[in-house]
Image (cartoon, rainbow, N blue to C red):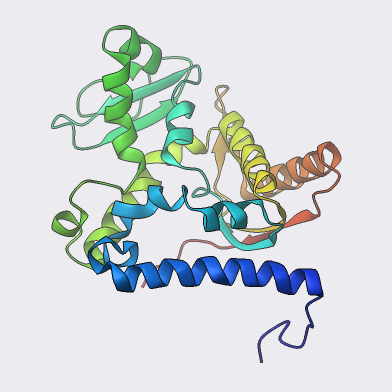
Length: 252
């Protein structure tokens, strides 16, 4: 039995539902009449941005959502947001020699961490190069979206490998304590803007670090979630709350 199956819609709710279903049927009918232009016949990367221009999407975006019941702590923001984080002070960057990957670390001084080439301050790198080109280069490391996904992501194992690398790559960027706090609070803001008023977040509660060399435990990370959630509820009293679900990394 589906939750809510016995709820009877009011007249206004029935009218709203019919508007949405008409738009949905219109999209499907168009696809049957024009199969070569039907978005769902293409790779998702080819049409995902076009969806945002549709009337149906914008209606759904403006509607109250109630709750988001499955979100992951380090995967809730898009590549443009993550790119903005690389403008934070005291960030160091290291590119692999073949430019195929990049590492990040926040530090007051030259990092002691392993680097194939050399660590450089992000701000210094931007001063010495074309910022637009540099940011475009960095952004590619924060997204799976590419021009030829079917050629590169040949099977589920390959795309999963690329997916997993994102979290390894951005880990030291996001687990810097000031960034972690900003990331979570901004996550709640983004949800509220989409009319989501309750959130269940899954997190492995990673250790955090700061510029003073302090490492924060999983318990500390959980307390940060709690403190920022309460702050957000005080700042936006219409937000119902959030629930933390401990979800450590699993492997087979």
